[in-house]
Length: 584
Image 1 (tube, rainbow, N blue to C red):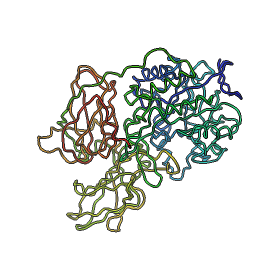
Image 2 (spheres, rainbow, N blue to C red):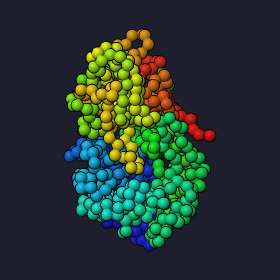
Image 3 (tube, rainbow, N blue to C red):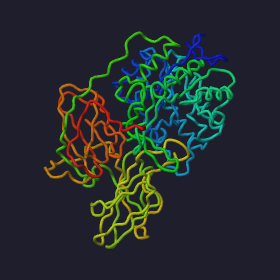
Image 4 (cartoon, helix red, strand yellow):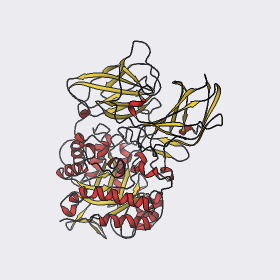
């Protein structure tokens, strides 16, 4: 059985030299019916390997549970990679970053307020051990030592940017060994973190997007012999709400890829195909200011969000052909796309009126955090009674992440974590008025010390300096919309949100497309019950990707949750995306 060998002069497999030419392809960001297509296109670009993270938080949505169904069928993804003749670099975490919600760490870890993430805290290590114990039985048959495609497994992810406890890394290595992993382990870090993030006896690799020679030199300083490998060669970047669409020229990225390969290094292109943060799975960054990531993870990659080859595909293929065999087939053609069609959303359901069918309330003397409610994604609706009429100031110690405030069902303002907002003034029309605060989790922080990111209304909450007598806290994960009862909305201006809007689209033949929400403000979209993701007029992206397998021949149902209001009651399905303006 072949085993990847870490030799002094590079990788060897079956006693033959092997240069790993890999690309990032996250199965959980791609519709499972499109996995085979993306893997085939990886091989045709000249890759011999694909890399994927494993999102602990999706596979284990609640403590004690573990899922491998539908879009989380990792064994099927590995089988498809093997069938395409591709090796796999597996990165199971426990922390993955990936601009993914919480860096892949499940939110239920944060139910313990003082748990220390990515450490030797026994509570954390016990949870990791349970996770690996549930995951690895499905992975072990796919290791190369047992005839499968998985060449190597990552120990931790850019740990040097977070901590420097080699004892913690040693605990993880021992866990993987106990759970049967017998292929080589590796770590990855940026050049200046290599010393802190590595473990003796485990292959170090470097992450970089430029300054190739300097990065490889630092790797060689920290690891005098063995393979040179760049585990994340950043050829694009991710976008944040309120920013611009980040791009990198194909010529510039191809030149640095050439430098890596000319130096004899192995490489993993991050990303080969970025995909989409479907549903509410995007992460966020907080380096003094909270910045949530957008729905698209296009990443300006060789394959765009819809899986079509872009300029980098041909440019990288040409570079790879100088160093390794590349299939002789032509560059794949773009997939068919939808023709433009406008859909009217003629039915409406108020979120506040349907709150009891969307979640069960918990009553306490203070607002409950999402993690206390056992909730990962979505919203929490907080409700209380205002005792007196007149001017009022609502003060909240911390809003995590965006709070819409209503008095007797009427919107009176918004508080945003991103803008460091903590207080809102409004008028209370009568004694006994109803206060509602709808709080959105816009994505848990995925990088740095801010990852202990509990959601909801944190700390003291007062009205005119006094804490209300009691609160109702209602989790609204919005993972089941069957409790909604839609009514036809008249021809007048669409209702002020938060409200669900629904319409139908008849198609002869499904195809990839993009839904445009011109005239809408902020919310999320489902098609046939599949959660496409968030939209926001703040941009940069103004369309959401619609995978062809989500659609069906005949009637299709479109549901839009608009949190504020719209100037229209229509959406448009298009054949082209709009990811927003780019920097000059």
